[in-house]
Structure formats: C-alpha cells, structure tokens
Length: 148
Image (tube, rainbow, N blue to C red; front, side, top):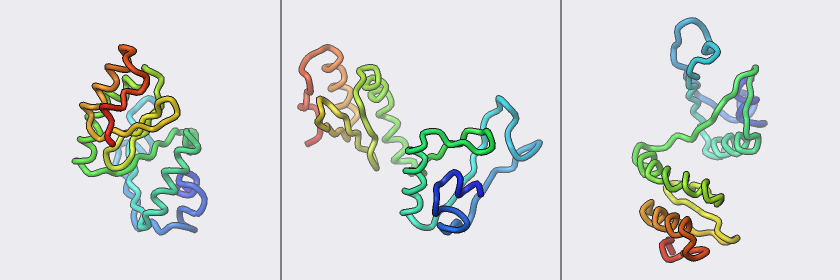
C-alpha cells in the first residue's frame, strides 16, 4: 500500500518488483514523534524504469503525503557523485538569488536557462565565474564560462 501510494500507479506489490524495503529500528514505535527527525526507509527497485517513474511521480506531485506525514524521495548516488554535486551548492544558491532556473543533470552537469537558452556547466568554478559576472551585470549570458 505505502509503495503504490508514494511511488505511483503500477509500482508496488501489484506492479514493480520490490525485493526488499528496509527501515531502521527505532525506539518507541513505528513513526517518529512530532517534531523529531524523520527516519529513512530504503527501497530497492529491480527495474531502473520503475526507479525513474517513482522519482518522476514524486516530482509531479511536489509533496508526497502518507497518513498525514510528508515523505521525501531521494535518488541514491555514489559518494563520488555526491561530493562532485555538493561543490555546486553555493553556485545554485546564487542562481536562485538571480532568479535563474537551473536543473542538475546526472551525473554532475548543471543546466541553466538564460534568456530561453540552456547553458551547461560541469565545472563549479566556471559556474561561480558566470554567476559573479551575471550578478555584476556584465553581459546577459556570459557563455564564455560554459561548457561547449
């Protein structure tokens, strides 16, 4: 039930094959107390298409709710990918301040929409240079720093 509600139609006991779902042992019951930190549930999906469909479903709904609790889904990345993506955090914050739309692509590629055209960055230093120039008002797109 939980899987089909959260992961979308066709995923769960009647759809996708889920060999294991792990929940860490917590003291005092199944769900965390109000105001307490949430606890993770790790779900392994055998089919990559089911994995993508579940994440797409979560993005479309924006907020997942189950029995009054908010549930978040996160993709599982290797430590190398996580560390590389983490380097983009400061630049993404500055992009938000500049009201520029962006999207992080797998594995480590940032797509920024500037005047209706996409600009791609795989190096966070080039992104920082781009954001500094953009914040200073020098040039509308400053594509020089982007990856070709």
